[in-house]
Image (cartoon, rainbow, N blue to C red; front, side):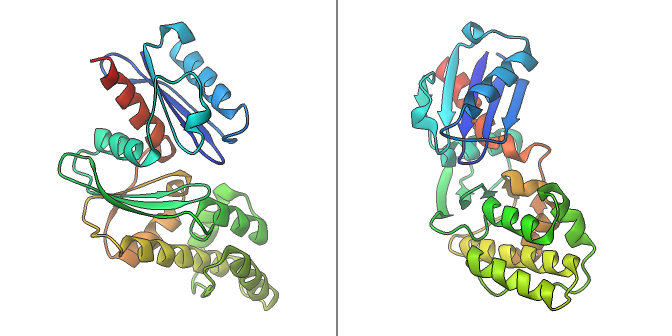
Length: 256
């Protein structure tokens, strides 16, 4: 059995593969590095798989907190692990758009599924999961309700600020002026999509495009990004776990 652990800034993910490469355990915990989130994620995945920790042959850690995870046989960057996980499920993938809690990445893959180039937005929360959390708070809804709320928007209200702090003030102002919550949500999603498109245009985006990270569960945002890039985006069943899956695939390869 092979364990991959992805320790992000806001979430911890664990995936276990068996010898044949099938997922037998998976857990996502909504707390990240510096907490007991990684431990909880591993314990949850082991429980689902019906395994003890001693039955894991190899373990690879990835993500922001990978160097703090002492039980790993190897630490590998999240860029490489996302590429490995996505290409494992979607061999034809050429581009990955990953929106994490504190950063956003666009990764281009070569024809062997390896990283060819990437760009990253890590110094500003605009276009990240943190921005989505701010949106939900301002709009008075749960994070998982944002997509359905934006679906009801008819005329998205333009949000011009790319800074999260200023965009928050702008959304509050739009609401105070009587704009519908749904239109503000739709406009904010389009604002994020423009930010992601700006990143993507710095490298040669090619189909097939796959979106990963928790934001990929927001179908309205996925569509906004697709519209902005004028390209179809493949939606995965479990987009948050791609880094952990890739780490587990690397762990399995260590044993060959």
